Length: 182
Image (cartoon, rainbow, N blue to C red; front, side):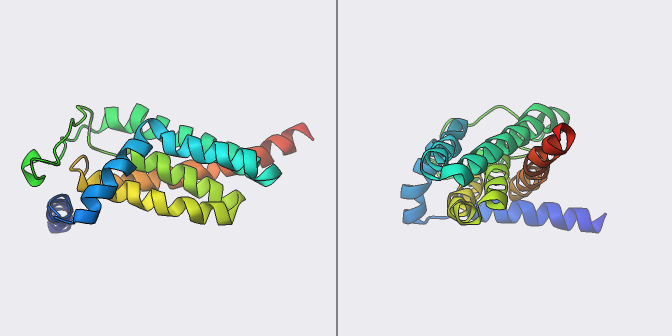
């Protein structure tokens, strides 16, 4: 039991530290990151850019990324959030000017992070350069979810693991379909 308590305490300590961080740069940049990630606009935009400018490889990366993102969101928001109810971090952790509307849904797991990691991991498997380019906004989305007080660090880690798991069938599905049809 001491291991779980240590993990819980560390999760809360890190979450409080990140969400109360006074970084001026973060205060300027992260609201734009949050807005871009809302409703997966950032990832749909990246998919459109890859599909239109990346040729055949770009189209494959875009489709694989969008499929993975959809699976990750379905699992995190449609399944796990309903099975595992967790309250959001306390508003006291966040400076008053930073507190915005917070969702009523379960904090666990981070659906934004699941979608971001799912998209990026699947894209990286098809087109590594594009995956590296997507890794930067993905990391910013994950950090923003804790910094804004919307999630604990463990929510973000769980979302990332769901995203990684969602990328596996998304990347393998085209090969499986070819095997069945050929």
